[in-house]
Length: 363
Ligand code: NAD
Image (tube, rainbow, N blue to C red; front, side, top):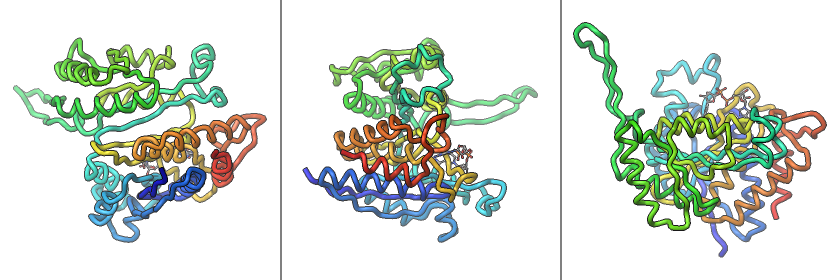
């Protein structure tokens, strides 16, 4: 069925405009091959919004984003030492816009795939016997609850300074993310590893109970539970065992960084933040890389793979998403590399060349 995709685009700051342009090129080509059309609404966020409106996010941008079916974003922010944006008070700086838009759109689930392509395994710090054949896992992190959003205080008790942070989850918060994790597993390897610390924490025991309830609605998906300390070890010992790793906010913060490190380059890491509807915000995991902005050398692959995730999870266009991922794998196989993933004997390509090649391989 031909579709008209209503996509919000935040090009952002630094390398943002360069990498998003390439992702749009690939999206347009994919739409052309598969008989869809892409309608884009340009949205301003971060430094680009400060330059025009004086604030990193406006109510109009939020309203416009809500009218889109999904938003594709580059990256936000500048060089904190030299950019005038950082002369502003913290609530007016570029990154404040990012936090505010995530909140306004109720994005409670963060997805970060960690894929090791066989061609890039040289960048992986793990032993070859562990990485042989590559791996492909997805960390799903709860983003709006838990320790980072719980009540906190520091008080003096009997002359001793004491700090409190509370870790709270209710069953609704757990259920909604667990459902998303199982939905996503259904589109992948049909396995969910739910990570907790149920041998110690009440919040983890509730997490485990609710995840088990949700699992009953997904008989095709295998569920396993793993303690977070064991998961941290397993990610470097045997990452191939994982498909979807579902976990709460703080554990996910740590494990997603660990998982991305074992893949190698930041320029390859896609991500998505989802809410209860099909809507999602899709962006590369890296920042705006002001050190290389405007040079035409940034790696656009993370953004292109984020666009593929958008097709898969917001539009249910799995074939089209597969086509983009296959095109990325082909470019790597043929030896093209941006500077960040360059190695001896390979062909160096700039941002636009990489986008052109990937777009031309969409089939
Ligand atoms: P960064 O990710 O921008 O850069 C770290 C290093 O990785 C740099 O050397 C950079 O050149 C390189 N790099 C990043 N993306 C690349 C790509 N696509 N291709 C090739 N090389 C790439 O992190 P940073 O320097 O700590 O932060 C720079 C700015 O980005 C800051 O303002 C920070 O707040 C912001 N930031 C934004 C986001 C976001 O928009 N979600 C995330 C992280 C950081």
